[in-house]
Each structure stands twice: as C-alpha cells, then as structure tokens.
Image 1 (cartoon, helix red, strand yellow):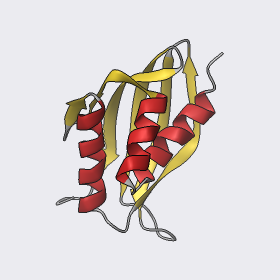
Image 2 (cartoon, rainbow, N blue to C red; image 1 turned 30 degrees about the vertical axis):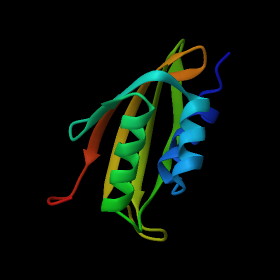
Image 3 (cartoon, rainbow, N blue to C red; image 1 turned 135 degrees about the vertical axis):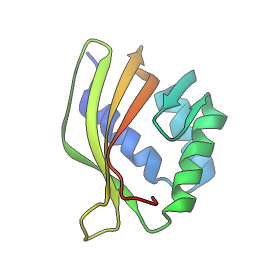
Image 4 (cartoon, rainbow, N blue to C red; image 1 turned 90 degrees about the vertical axis):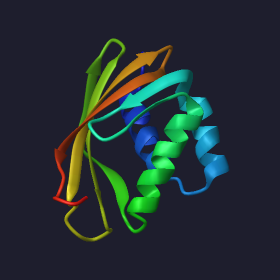
Length: 121
C-alpha cells in the first residue's frame, strides 16, 4: 500500500530543497523519469524540466517556504493534498491543491491548482 502521507511530505520537501544536487536525488527517488508537472502558470516533463520549475519558484520567492495544509488523501494510484507558500511565521499568500498520479509508489504526474494567488505574484 502506498503511504500517501510520506509521498506528500516528500513532495513538499522537494520544493523546499535549495541544493540542486540534493533536489535531483530526491526527484530520482520519488518521481518516475518521465514524470510530468502542470499548473496554470508552468509545466514540464522529466527531471530536468521539473527541477528547473522548482528552481524558478525558489528564485522568484527566495524567502518563502512550502508546507502542507491539512492531511493528504487518496485512493489507488491517486493522491490529493493542499499546500501553502509563504514566509515563516506569517500567513501564506499563495495556496494551492495538487493532484498526483502514482506509478509503483512514485509520482508519475502532478496537476496543480492555484487556490489563492495575490495579483502580481
């Protein structure tokens, strides 16, 4: 059985990882090589593209950090969880919900929805 809590936590840790080599290791461990990420603002397929997306978000929001909102849930090879992005100790201005499709316990695809984004973000 897939541990959805562990997958969601690892996903958030990946988006917070600032060391590129460590981030690549995390991708290779938790994502399939042909995994795809898509949300209303960006998309990419494969380790290089997903890593570049994460680096871009970190560059744009250097003092922000991702964290889970509530508990993830799922069934079969499908997982849903909500997250927030903001500075430590303050309300997060950016919030979203991601849907993952898993294959053999690894992320095969992520479809992200932005639930709250301030203008100009």
